[in-house]
Amino acid sequence: MGALVWLVVGLIFIGAEVLSGDLILLMLAGGALSAAAVSAIFDSPLWVDGIVFAAVSLLLVFTVRPVAKRHMYNRPRLATNTEGLIGQHGVVVAAIDADSGQVKFGGGVWSARAAHPGDRFAEGESVTILEIDGATAVVWKG
Image (tube, rainbow, N blue to C red):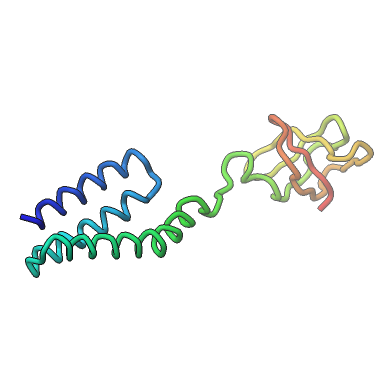
């Protein structure tokens, strides 16, 4: 009977974790499921199940949870959309100055302007994309 109670408690913790997302309740669920396993296998008294629950829960909270949170929140960032274009190299299609020009990179031709007001790039020169400002590539010599 005790194993069934610990199993239900563990499932309740798992269900509550879905709503909270902080991983504390998931660690407590691990402790409850461990207590359910001990109770089912050894038919242990409630106080032993409680000790197993507390020990496993604390172990999970202080060892597994920090690692899991670090992996959840510090994933490598994948550059998408215009962020993925920064740093690419292109070829000037129409002369580029501080106000206008065109550059070919990433399979298309973009309107472009020089990053620094005094810079000018002639047709055929190689440039590097510094940033994307709206639909205009801001380029510099690179």
